[in-house]
Image 1: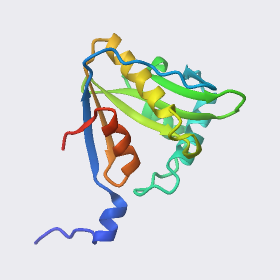
Image 2: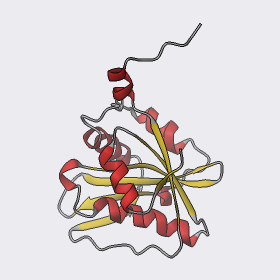
Image 3: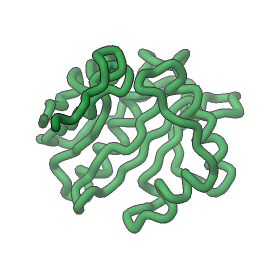
Image 4: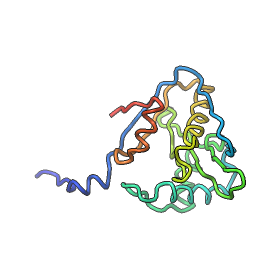
Length: 172
């Protein structure tokens, strides 16, 4: 018997995971974005900031991301053997109480991978994503890691375009 596949509209809503990678050939240049401060994860208060950022950043995306709890954050990050607070960055706008972007560096089978790059919709196309990505790539460069991996969804066209413009190529 053949497996049943979701109807076309259901497949479009689920999306297909796209794997991408970039080979770093020179030290990344970290851009300056006026009005932003970059910092690392600073403790339990950042969990709620990250969860709120995740909800707002992925609102309306298909496939949708399900709501997370503190426990989800802990199992996705804090409980992982690769987790280091110095491998998660937050972009904070001057005078704002909430973060406007975040990115984390994961290690998958010992290889560096972008883990949850997020930017609030109203802060997109202002350099926040480029700044966060450059911070992550600069750390990889300093540690001698020359290939950076990531996964995204084929339905997230803005994300695909963002990564492709920065030299990431599809693997699958």
